[in-house]
Amino acid sequence: MLLAIPFPMIDPVLVEIGPIVIRWYALAYIAGILLGWRLARVLVRRPPVVATTEQVDDFITWVTLGIIIGGRLGYVLFYRPGYYVTAPWEALYVWQGGMSFHGGALGVIIAAWLFSKRNGLDWVAFADRVVCVVPIGLFLGRLANFINGELWGRVAHDVPWAMVFPTGGPEPRHPSQLYQAFLEGACLFALLMWLARSERIRAKPGFLAGAFLAGYGVARIIGEFFRQPDAHLGFLFAGATMGQLLSVPMILVGAWLMLRAKERHAI
Image (cartoon, rainbow, N blue to C red; front, top):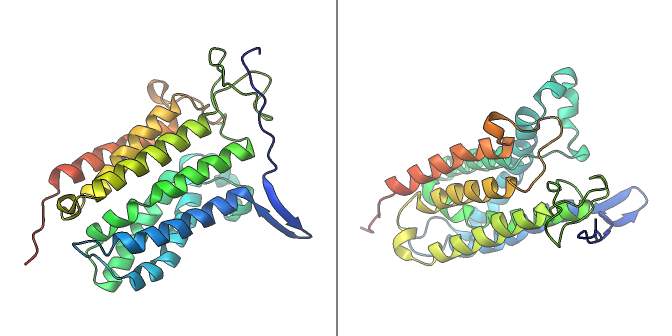
């Protein structure tokens, strides 16, 4: 306990006026979508151009639905299938929390495919630019997890920055939300922005999408070594967590996309 530092008790509710409640977690989603939208408008115009700014504006509704529906269904199917079999109507209770990034990612992929088909876009090239802005939302979302005092890390008696979380018992734990914000958010964003600077890489449909999938998978697997697994799941195959197991296919698909990506020369 001598190594533990106090958890900064930040009220998860930013504003509460009567029945109106604004939470930091909701603001993280909203800010991530808005900031990502502004950056995506810039990225799609870089040569080779893959979409118009107006099409990015239209895509916002699609991506928002993909995040919410995919994230919620992913949580239901990946993390609490047994519970929702007995109470399926509660799968609609999004205000109770419970979102899965892997499910949200799948929802956005489907949304991008449907939107691209409807608008005559190359959906792989379009997805390349869209994925570059996703780490913004990941970074803000992990900070919101930290403010909420949820998804805390494993017990850590040997690090001076360990914290005692309000719902994590008396032992000091890794602030794994901050680790994941750094890895999945800041580091992945820097990598994708560096890659996206190259016109040659931008001209290889699938490369940036593959870099995102593989990069997130690696970052998530590393972060999960410090994060306490969900109590109702615990450790799974070979001591891995659900987050790690779901990230392995992302790394494989991402590597495959990067290896098969070929430069497309303008005609």
